Length: 151
Image: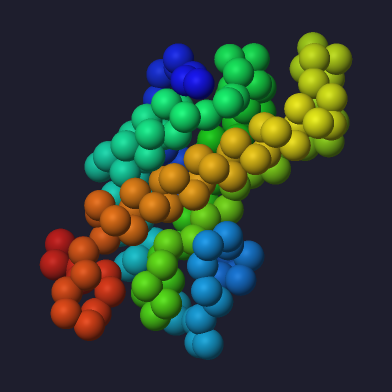
């Protein structure tokens, strides 16, 4: 299935959460306060990682146009967050939850099963973008992860 929508702007990355709160990331033994990885991720998202990941996701998603309209209406795209765990060599993500109380007319259009399906598709989008960041944008140099030649 495919979702025929324009690619939205990438999410802005606000203050990082606790690394253990992200999906697909190993919580580090020690957290460092360096914001360079976060700034680099935001740059990578703007420079094409978001577009590539979203395009890949929309070609395989089962989300409907109505469901995506709900996601846009609620501003859920900008609620995504990504975390670059340099020590564990991975990029985690947080997918936004769909609120329990939906605004009209969505409250009558979607039941709890629909909401669970939307959240699963949002999770898949986060995983896809995380994979794109890890494989296409973050350069590994020797034993180091996250070579910051430009950052």
